[in-house]
Image (cartoon, rainbow, N blue to C red; front, side, top):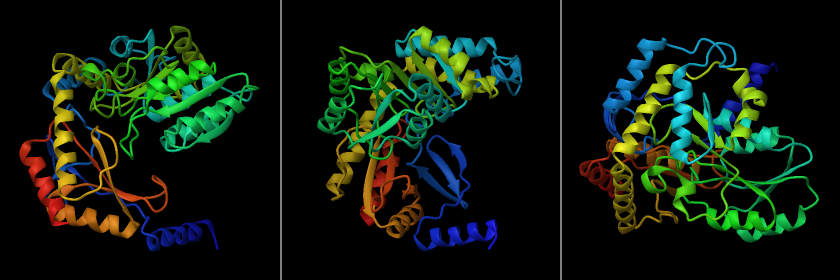
Length: 384
């Protein structure tokens, strides 16, 4: 059997287990509307939490940058691909997040790989939440530090690991801010206090918290009254800000170190200028219209309360991500297809993205959802 036969066999196995993934063409129609297989539907599965992806100011800033700089950065930013708009985006992002400095990356995945590899090495230990995002898990492994897993949001378990790891040069607690598949929030005040007690550092992936948490959407570090702040905070432009790319915020000396050491920064072409323009436009809109964040939370509460009234068991959390645990892979897919028949797109999430036996419908809310959109969603779930 050759290597292609092996792959065919593996794909057949995925089919049998209800785990095979296929691309589905989504024709964006504006707002939260789309067409899939010639059927119009409302999107309840995007990360466009503030509805900024097609905001006129975001598009205008993107078009302006496209005309001024061209389609791409043309080179690594350390060669000839560092444009004024890159510098402007990083300065504005650092101000927005309340950090000394910022470095932007083409993706959030690349940002995590860069930052964690720079912060720790073979003499160090990482304490990682079991349900952290895959990019965090991969970054922890690539860093070469000893990797220890603590149970999800279990601070007693985390404390036990801290007590056992004082022999390491450096201890780094790594956590998501808003967990993307369960929708729950890290108790960052308690985590940072615990880290301070044991002389450890904290790294936070604020991808789903940026634009969502804290006053004006500034993120997880502004959501809690912190006494001790995380050493480094990562975030993305690709979710609530509706654009593309990731960023790392932290002390200026660390950002300078990243610029010199991060392979995912050094050996890749810079963000396209139009993408930088879109991100700048989104940050500007967010600062001018902070009520978008309030609207997001209002919509989330309406949907959460409505689903609970219908008898659905919605796990803890109050943000825009709501998992409805189904269990079996095939059943989750069937429920997703039935919702699409009603004009609602909510995708089934299955292992390995989530633990085995916890296949689910992952519903995400946007400030751009109208009252009619929410009513349509609740009617569709009532039929289920």
